[in-house]
Image (cartoon, rainbow, N blue to C red; front, top):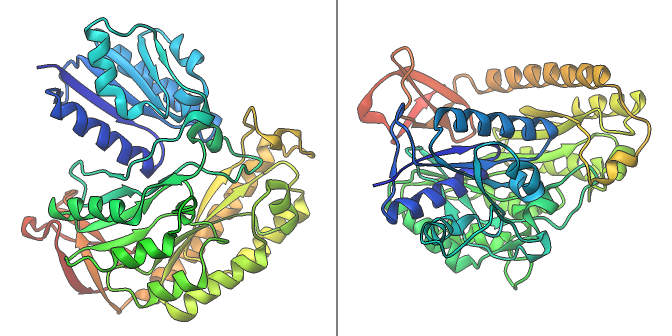
Length: 416
């Protein structure tokens, strides 16, 4: 029986995809290599959101080819889709698989073994990436990540994701709900809905994201759901109002802002302005005052003058967010942003990033302080550290307690 090892870089969507790929391979007779064992096959699922991500992918490939010198090495994911030739030239890489073929890895490996298929690169053009199936991760995680949508049609000036994952696409509400029922039957207690642009669910059908979450909320089980990042222009008031009265959805939002300056948002070709963003966050807090709101923001985008950055900081000081996810801008070949002036020096980008991180720490501490003494429900996780276990409340506060094996993957009402 051939032993296989998996490595995933990047977003939660990648983890869900790796989980699906691993299930398919194990069903075909492969088994996971234990820690320290030599693998016959290595599958590396890559990310390419920044140049730093590309570098980490190359480092991971070199590490796995060194640690498993006799293994057949497969590289897939966004980096593989965008730069297949570059990856194929890395010593030790045997196969590069693009976004449209990643769920065919088991079949491709069988065809190669039977000498029915030749060639190192199996990557189709991005405009031919059309397949979609709802999938979820399960690998010993308390939280499951369910892929409900893939691809993006937005083409923001700084982003390569549409080139790596293709156009926006999703399945039906019924098919997605069937996968959720399967995850729940396997013991899932928390499911995070993920995608590249999940608010676009059902774009090419007569269904939409609100239809999906309404159907999901009807599930008859002890399970809760979180929504991963959703564009502010797609976060409708009806979605917010529904979540405020939901049986299963948590008061937890992750909304990309990227910049609090309207001029920079225009340079980015974002589809909203800061006024709409503020309106959405105030709407959330009016209906769900204890909601956790995570916000993506970018530091040092080309064209972001000192005044524009100050506008972002001033704006963030009035937004009722709980935590920032700060990204430092990096140039990406093939994006329109590389033609924008002025260029922000790397040192200044880091300075701005540090300022945003400090603001995030201040706001997170204030949010935690506001929650002390309140009653909440924790889902306890299996990880044990220093005889402690931890878990998240419905509004995403990490709680620690003395380790109790009997509480793993169960809900417990506690006072924060």
